[in-house]
Amino acid sequence: MTLTKEYLPILVAIIAASLAYLYTKRNNKLNNFYAQVKESLEGILGSMYFDLRIILQIEDEFEKNYEVQKWFNKHGRIEMSLFKLGDRNLINSYLDLEKEYRKLRNRTQIDQKAFYINLDRFYSKLDKHYWNSFQSLYNDYNWFNKVLNRPFPVKIALEIGRHLLNFSELIFYISAVTIYFGIYFGVLKRLSILEKNWIPIDFIMIAIRLAALSFFLIALISIILPGHSKWTEKSEKVGNFMLSPVRKLIRILKR
Image 1 (cartoon, rainbow, N blue to C red):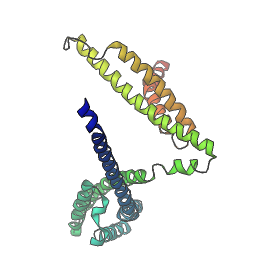
Image 2: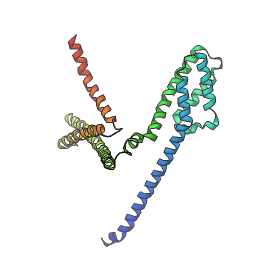
Image 3: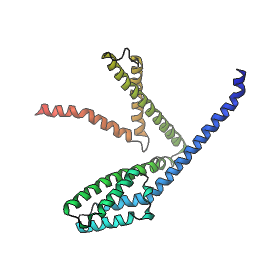
Image 4: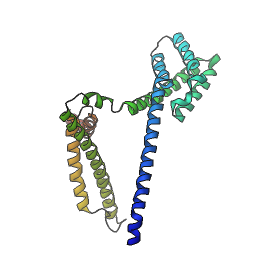
């Protein structure tokens, strides 16, 4: 016991130093990530995405082919730094697409059609990557834009509400996982695959109550907080998904 007391301050100091190091390292990585995303959005990713978006809207075939050639010449240059796209699969897709385009010197109509199908597929990947990067960088933009100019008591209330929302989401996910595995193990027990239910029914009932309460808080806070309508949209989608079979049945019965 005495030995533990002697070494306890040293142990606490080591743990505190390790946590501080890990936190600083994580912050540095996060800052580097944001800087790289910003550079990519302002540079090759933004240029490649918006240029291609305009090109695909061109209806004249000759003009479209000319703009595609310009697009490859512009973004295939070394100074555009393809690595700044930050996605290995996207870079490989671009290189494969460029290789396919360079082979179309004596292109037939069928080859050209196949190329534009692949170009559309590449655009879909590029679109997803661009908006994911944009969301990573500007995820809190709407929040700060709407909150920072509010009176101080309102800002405090909104910040508390935001933390409560995050906590409610955590409780909801934990409860949902508990309910899922509770039902899963219950089914296995009924099939005599398991000897006993690993998650007692009392735990499942508590998880159901917590899930209902947390979902209610999430829906309520999402309506109140600025820029947090995602849960409202998700609940509407879930509601529509659950009600769609009922609506179809009603339509069938009305015939």
